[in-house]
Amino acid sequence: WASPDMFAFALLYYLLRSLSVPPLLESLQVLDVGFTCYNIFCVSSVVSTMSVTLPAVPDEPSSPNPSGAGWPGLHRAYTIVGPCVVALSLTWGFFFARGITSPVLSMYLNTDTILEELGLASSLSSVVDTLGLQALVSSDVSLCHATSKLWSWFLASGELNLMLASTMLGGLGLAATVLDMALLLAAGLAVSLQASLNVGGGLVPALLKASHFVKHLAMLDVCATGVVVLSLAAGIYREQGMMIQMQYGIFYVIASELVHNLTFYYVMSAAAFSSPKGAKRASDEG
Image (cartoon, rainbow, N blue to C red; front, side, top):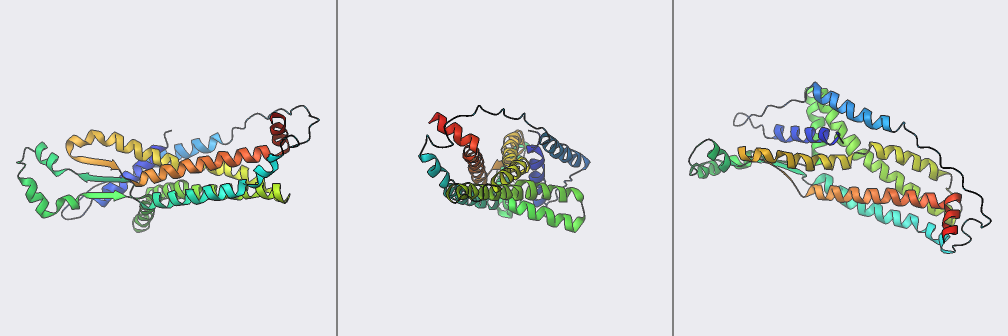
């Protein structure tokens, strides 16, 4: 759970750099070597955990009851896995699209608080409002726009950490999540085809294995956690007039990840019970 911070750093960098409007306002920010090492540590930790294998489940004693014979509705239940996964995928797609294109985090300066901290008269706030400084020092960020903007800054400056930040957001945060949902959709359809037409069964284990691997690398839920943690931790700067707050887009992101995880465990369970061992166990329990 160190990984949320690497997404928070990338989004905070974007917010601070977006505030730079020279010559009226300049902001200085840099992703240094510590950011590089931190990202390498987080990603390598995730990859290393995938090399840990679970012990094999011992074979169950053979049963005279044939697979699924004791539960007539079992076969029909497998055939609806595909349509259910399609419905879940469409629901996920709506939340995901809204989440990555809507603002998830915002930052602005509270001029009244700043004037109070500087010991200046509060009447100057009207002058500040007239100059439009409040709009000048306000910024928000969506995951999709941050990814593309960080990449464009990398192309313009050649800073490798900007490429790393863009890759983390766009690759592990967004693309890996889309790929995992595509694998789950294919696996759900394969389970239904196996049940209804007795075809596609050989694809299911391969698709589930790939999904299990990709889901470890899909870090949109980690990114959402980083946004929440950053907005809460930034509360200490409110007394200095800097306001960093969550925006409505993060709730779409969280909803999409809830549907993502629901789809993952639903497909995994359906595939497990559609196997000979799983079907026999369900039949025995039924």
